Image 1 (cartoon, rainbow, N blue to C red):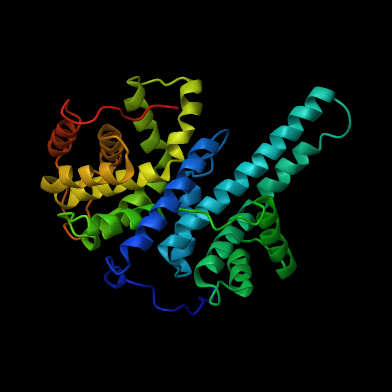
Image 2 (cartoon, rainbow, N blue to C red):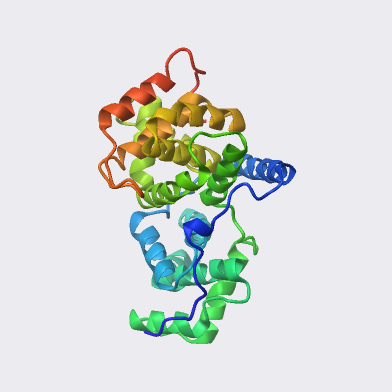
Length: 337
């Protein structure tokens, strides 16, 4: 398979914080907060159903093979997620009508079969669309995509590839420039730098990327453990799970959890200060930040962390998080809305 000639990827050392005016940062943070609030309010139904481990891993590996930036892989997952949810809702809606009326052909079955057969093509189209948003004039070519699909045993024409992209675009009303948790992480790290955070933003950034990958790959188990902790019950009801969707779609909450967990891994002695800054910036309760960061750390403890190559002792995790959620701090916590 031929590999596309790509520009050199930006390394972590190339990423600079503190280069943007504070007024610009304030405006950008406000815009992200408004986007996040709208997304949380609209969260319902099957949202999050297609951030499944094998799907995310496929997108991540494909993005890596094509030398795409990390932001592209996250955006591709979000585009695919929203597209598949739209398709699933459409199939369920048609199935409900046709099964109730019992008249006419049951074409919802054909739609389901078609969606299943073209899933890989749609996934690759989402990655290609995300690459176009990122690189503009240097994108993944149709020839590269077709060669990749052929290597997997899928034979498609350029016309079918274009139709696939158009199908995704139309389904999402051409709204594919979607926010990702990475944008929230980068913005909050920028603000932390201006607020005098003891742990340098550049030091936190690499760990944040690793943990964000982890949360995407282990999305269901991370949020399942968070749900059980939030309701203090090991067997959540279906209704509780449905109400928890708004928490899963809260990217601002995920970003503060990622940064808090990263700060603990990098320097647990400064963890409380970082969490305090995050609470002040976002207004998210300290207990909520502690609960999510604990869920993330629970699924990453024992793994090597960038730069340190050491493990985080479980007793340190528990001790620091208990201190953060003591009565002297703000109460609240994550609860299904």
